[in-house]
Image 1 (cartoon, rainbow, N blue to C red):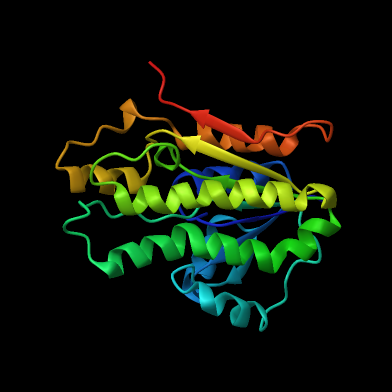
Image 2: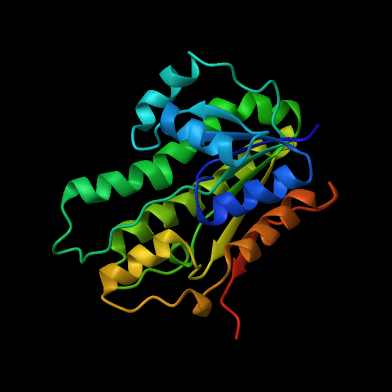
Length: 229
């Protein structure tokens, strides 16, 4: 059975990806920040299994995994989790930069490192759900965009490093998507939130599964998705 590990499965794009994979009968593992969150997601996705690890503290992921049973092999690792806090360079404190870099960049790097043996075994696929901010930075988006630009660099380097091991690497760059994170962004921007204006999470999930299901003779490396209409 095809096995996947997804981060950020509690809402938005991560939840949509998890739902699609579970519906087609794939083996789904979910990274959760604590046992309570794991129980909640297992109730939502009964066939899923969970691993506990807090992306806010990437230096503790190795210790956490050392005390749990990991999957024997993985066909994909799908990074969907992320955090955002807007603010100008003049006003953002170091802790805000550090928090976004930890969740959005350092933890994906560490999680990938820890699971590379399982991915190499199955010649698997690493998907980084990035952001349009990973390609262009706007005012007040400096810290978030820096973390996402770094995520692009991580994906590009990993793709070259793991090519001979048969591991494929894809970056997906969604535009504004109707998720709880987007609602938070609108609150920070002081703008009304209308989810109908933005991409449905299921549409981004479709692009992720397209990359995962592509025959082995090809690889989607970078894919941008923008709101239609």
